[in-house]
Length: 112
Image 1 (spheres, one colour):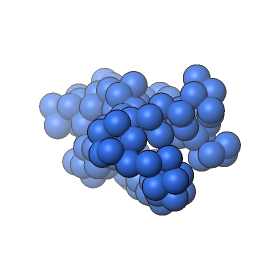
Image 2 (image 1 turned 135 degrees about the vertical axis):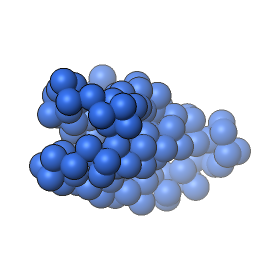
Image 3 (image 1 turned 135 degrees about the horizontal axis):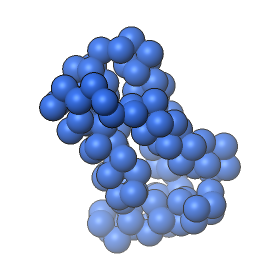
């Protein structure tokens, strides 16, 4: 997906779900993107720590942020992280899942 596609998807979702005008959505978007960036940093820190509980909690948090923006494809990856951590799955490739999210978020962050 391209940056424009993600941004358009977010704008459309916020507009429809919360009955917001284009100006309102555009004004809120930088804050949402900043929040996503902060959640992603926390997810990466949790991954680096090797603490599955912290990683699962971070996965849960970022999943909610994605769902609030209508980004269900990203939320699905975060859900995998959350569930696998909760199950104590040591065989999961958490680094790959987090990298997949980083790729998607970078598309949004780098080109809002």
